[in-house]
Length: 224
Image 1 (cartoon, rainbow, N blue to C red):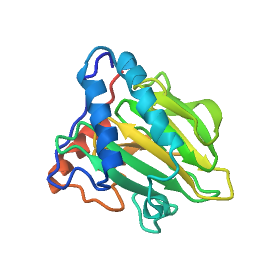
Image 2: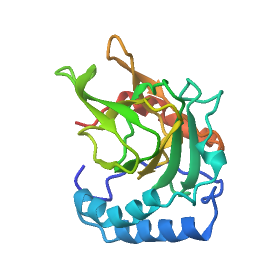
Image 3: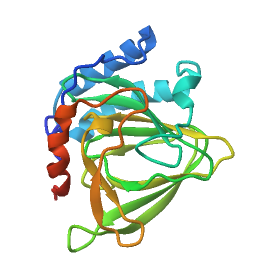
Image 4: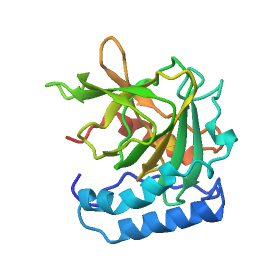
């Protein structure tokens, strides 16, 4: 992925701001302005970092309801994926991912570039990479993540990972990604074989339009 226009989009007809506050609107305006300057993704990431840092450092803007686990969720294990903002053209989303203590996400990809940061708790991250067959994945590296830390996601490098909460409290991470992550078809990978299967995580608090179902077939294709 080389430029900011190379994105995977899916449209929806619901509200854009699920968490509609002046603070959120200011942040999203800053994000859109940074992306609109164009150029390479790496350059856009650098422009986004100051706004994302301020969001991560502010402990007062995110209501408790968006930091709660979810017994019924597409991720499983009580993991809650809470939509905060979803562009109607599918070009941008912000959501909180809530993982209870001791629980892990599936091994999964994102199919978008952006920023991911840990807002609360601690996590272990296992990063995976495709093997020579471009289908199975294998463990590439492991990282320990502390509150306030964030990293850039620029597929195809390091787009596949698994998160485990290591703190005694539920971990909350913020995802600013350039698609409608919860509603696109992407991949999860078998823990034992490393093989992919179609996966749509959904959101706890927002519905995916039925028209997205046609993307099921595209989840089998990879970009290398």
